[in-house]
Image 1 (tube, rainbow, N blue to C red):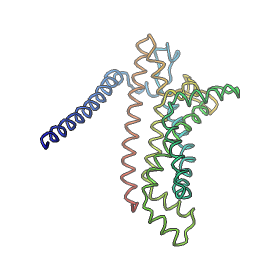
Image 2: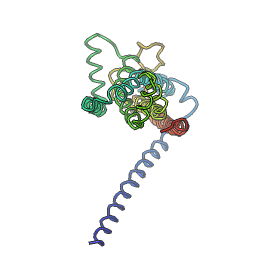
Image 3: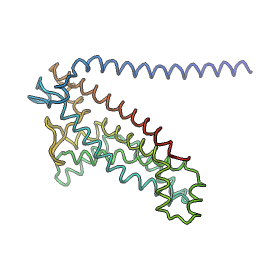
Length: 283
């Protein structure tokens, strides 16, 4: 009996190890393929010039419009989202803490919204735009992505806030602190998680394609205002990779390399900020 348990334990150990290393191998293969085709296409002109002659047929120019468009869209959506998500997460864990059933229902709804495919958000936003006669624009893309990443931010902050010791909440109230002051204390304690949630939403926003496919539009130029269409790196990859012209495909792979590096940089910064800010908490 004991030998059977040892065999079972070893079997699942090696099975889990196989899947883990397989995923790592697949990840390195994807990164290798992107780097092999994208790095030779990268140059100073590629990241500082807009496409010339059209993004689909033009052989010259770069992806400067897509880089700035992605940053504008992701940053704008993240700022709007955190402005809504942080008060909601604090309210859930301070004012709603005694209403467990309602709080559970709210978390369930947020989980469901988190699982909704981005294309559904894009299609819904597009239908609203049709009703009001609006055109694809940077603002429409920002709002769509903001609604997309909002459940992610709220749940990420919620998971951090609900792990704050109950004793801290009770002791601050017993000292006569208002709920607004308690929210300030909770904010300080959850700051590493809040920073991580913001960067998580930013990374999801900058890498999303489906949600902005119908809402942000596409252009060869950098938008001068919120009502103009905007190119993004995922859409640059999506459109240009299907071009029959090799130089245009090279731009797509260069955009893939830049997007991968941006996501990697965000992940590193997220871990760094989390480790630095966590030194100021007393959890």
